[in-house]
Length: 327
Image (cartoon, rainbow, N blue to C red; front, side, top):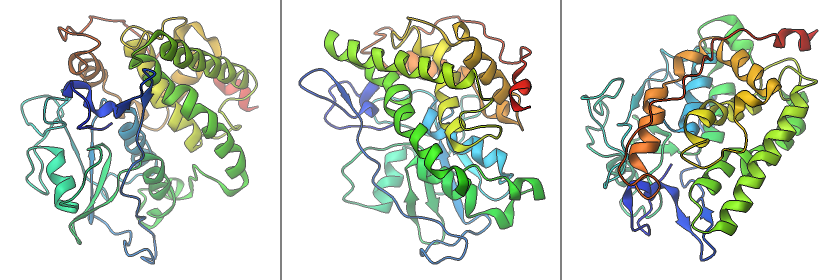
C-alpha cells in the first residue's frame, strides 16, 4: 500500500496512479535488498537486528506476519502496527487504537519519515510492509513477496522449533509450479480486486472484475482436486492468496464492487480458507476490525462519509473436510 503524491485525494493515495483510461496502476517497490543467512548480501540474518512495520489491514503486510508466525520468528523479528486509518499524511503511528503502537525504533510520527531517513531523496510510495535494519539505519526491503522468501529461508537458525526450521514454503521441487500459480493469481486476484475497486471508468472496472472472477473460478477448480494450490503442503502461493480471500467477503464484495459471487459461494475455496485459518496460529494474524475500518473509513473517494458497515458475520472457524484431499 502506498502514498502517491499524484493523487488528489490522499485518503486513497496509496493506490499509486490512475491511467487516462481510468485503470488502477500499482507501482513497484523501491527497496529490494536481501537479508541472507551468511551475510553475503551485506545484511546478515540476526536476532533483533531488524524491525518490521506493518498494517493489519494490508494484505501485502499480512503475508509477512503469517510467514513470521509459521516459521516461529516472533522473538527474532519484532513489529510495529500503524494506525488502521490512512490519513492525509499517509500511515501514522498511534497508541490510541487497539493493537496499534508508537514507533519504538525511529520515533517517527508518520511512516514517510522512515522512508526519508533511509533516503532523503525518496520520491516513490510510502508502503507497508517495511523491513528496517537497526544496525545500518536503513530500509532493507519493502516488497512483501521478497520479504516472505527471506523469512522462509534465511532465518532458519532462529526458528522456534525443529518443525518450523524444516518447514519450507518455497521448496525447490515446486519452484516452477509455485511461480506459475503466483504469475496469474497476483494480477487477477490479489491486484485484481484493487483494479476493480479503484477503477475510474466502467471499462476499467469491467476488465478488473472480470479477471477477479476468472481467477477465482480457476482456483475453485484447482482446489476441487488438491488440498492446497500445489499439492498436500502449504506453500507461499497459499499464503499470498489467503490474505486476499480473508478480506474478500468483508470488504471487497461491497466496498470494491466484487459482488458477482462471495467466497462462501465457492465450496472448495471456502473450505480451503477455513482450513488455512485453523493452521498453526494463522488466525492470530487476522484482524477484521482493522481490515474493515481501514478500507471503508480511509477510501473516501469510494465511501465519501467513511461509514463502516456492520457486517457480514463470517465464521472462519466453521468445520471443513479438506483433509480428505491429502490422502
